Length: 210
Ligand code: C5P
Image (cartoon, rainbow, N blue to C red):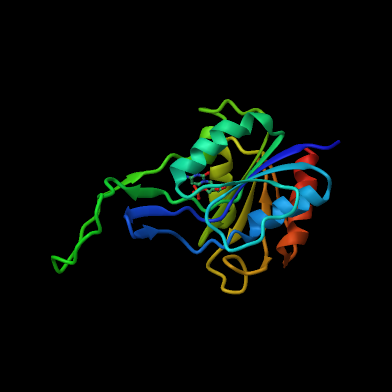
């Protein structure tokens, strides 16, 4: 059965002033691999992506966004149409409370910027958006990987969470390979280290089996 996937990918970019922004090291490779693999298997794919230097897989409905607030808006708008939603984006947890109209000047020896919390997009899926389809989150952890991922799964109402240890240098961020475990409510399934496209096929197969 062909399904409709909604996938978030990449980093977000939060402006500090008209010429500067705050972002993170996400390359988007995992989310784009998921989008390409799902499309290749004949599914319909909506890819909501922060700024990435990657080719958009052919045949995918592509929605570029910059900030977490924009990503939230795009997910809110499109999630009801999807059967399977996979949140692979690395969303900034905070954004500057005020973005000045003009460039911040080099005046003092220190600079203090107040940040406010961004909306938790994954955490809003079941609650704010009333989403009832299959929901998959990612968890990038540096310690207690499985335990932290299971907490996330329960808090956010996911069917499973794809967890990886980002303290390891050989996998994860910007790498084309990753080693993850799929954390379900009652069990954990470690997947062997593989390239992100092959892992995507495994993740999609598990998602379709729910
Ligand atoms: O709690 P944490 O940010 O580590 O959770 C990671 C998961 O939540 C990822 O699937 C990420 O895409 C998603 N997320 C989100 N919106 C946020 C923060 C994280 O959708 N504001």
